[in-house]
Image 1: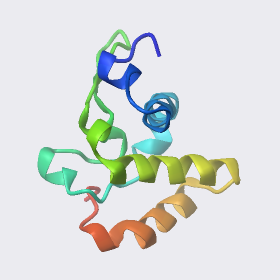
Image 2: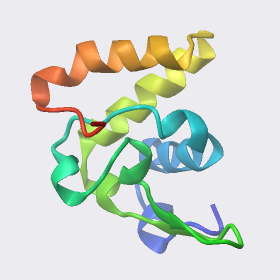
Image 3: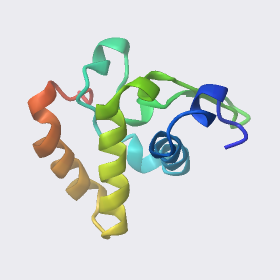
Image 4: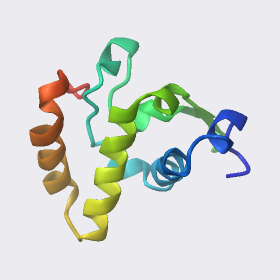
Length: 109
């Protein structure tokens, strides 16, 4: 948490956990879509709701969008739960698509 922005450090624990999980699981989270409408902001996965860039030295620039978006955090929390249940990323993506498509379009083209 020490590298997280102050806004994340002061966020509810469920949001802090989501940021930590996304940072720890970038390969999976880049394959999980978001359905909050953030594709219009240039986000291309649920990962992008939390991380805007990682430089060549591995320094992470955080996106604060997920701080105020319960859909982003809910998708991450569902992903965390499903990974603990040994679901594969394709299975998780299917669940997320089926559960959240009612809110809008996927941000994964």
